[in-house]
Image (cartoon, rainbow over all chains, first blue to last red; front, side, top):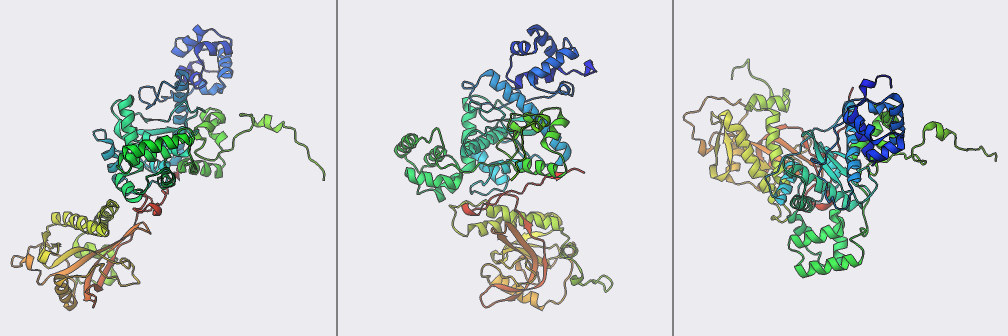
Length: 368
Length: 220
């Protein structure tokens, strides 16, 4: 980089956090002092080309990434992270930084494609059950099962990406970007049913907690209640699932709603189909079958329609994901995790080898 | 109407005809049909069977009146048949549910339910009328709106098609009453394009859920 004045410290912080590094660990990797990293990140000092190269190599981002405009990644304050107890600060910051990269990708998509406009209402004054019914009505969904939660959200302007962290420790989260565009990040490591419930849960945060706090036990309970009611409207559950009073019937009946056995059981109890005793018995029996840790008879995972169309059309026009990465000055290996589980993508088998290295693979033509 | 201004409605598109005759746009009428759809769709599965149609009719009637009253029409209920009547008292419109042939130009639709004496009288009157007169905004001072005599009845016939995820409707003039007590003859029929809700979500029954087709257009 020739123009040192174009160095953007915001991008350095994001790159470091994305890799889950402390300033100290980055300093060690780059052969610099922690103090100088701090100075670079605060903007008090500008790295020399040599220092920046060492940093770029250390975090695995292209040199060009550190110029460019600010990336206003999701912040701890406006992201609806759930249990902090099971997640380290580094995991949280890495996820938020990945959210910043998703913003970059989303901007590229907006620049090249016309997507549905945002139609996610503010229902913050409402009880979750009422809000769920109202949103279904507003979106013309009727009272039957939702076929694909991701598609419903995408159709109404929500941008859906995958959580880049490959761990179950980090839950899905959502946020309103600059108060105007809703984003949802799903943990695609979880079961299809759990991820679908997460999607509805995050939708609950988006409509219920746009302006207030989106953290704490109370708002989490509200988002859960919303998700349960949105996926399984009371009147429809009573009409179609009133027979579900035993575990075999629960395991069969949950498939109609495409929810986890545990979430379905809870809803059956909530709407009055299962008595307290039947509910407890069913929970114990389901737990003994391992339903709390792995979904029994899990359904296929929901995928993103928008990302599939965007990548498909782009590919047809000669723009691969790698090209998109180049345009954004990030490695394709930093984009792939944002799409993982949401859209079929070719994953390089050697963890992100460059094309040149791939071409050096030992292939021999065998004569027959 | 002077001879110079006389036009054949057959030469007009349905959209042009309703604009000329009733002073209403397709978009405005779409709003009534949309209300029928929404009301039908919002009826939960625990409601009595058939209530979806009743709800669609009730809310569609409300939407029709909300549309026409600002245009000077008045809401009336001769023999409990809800209508809106034009300012000159010569035209009335009612929302009524039709069978699956509604909106199909190649088939003659029927009303979904049997109709009563009020509709029969209006159909008899309509069948004797050879000309269509545009609605006049001048108020007919001597006309008794509630008696419905001398009024040409038009029906906004709608059909909610869950399978096709659409609502079809037409604004048509009933001219024949079948032996089954349903209206089965119309002249003319102003058939509007079906309103499709393919992309709006799942149907009421659990197994007829449709998926969304999300528009993603490349920018030029």
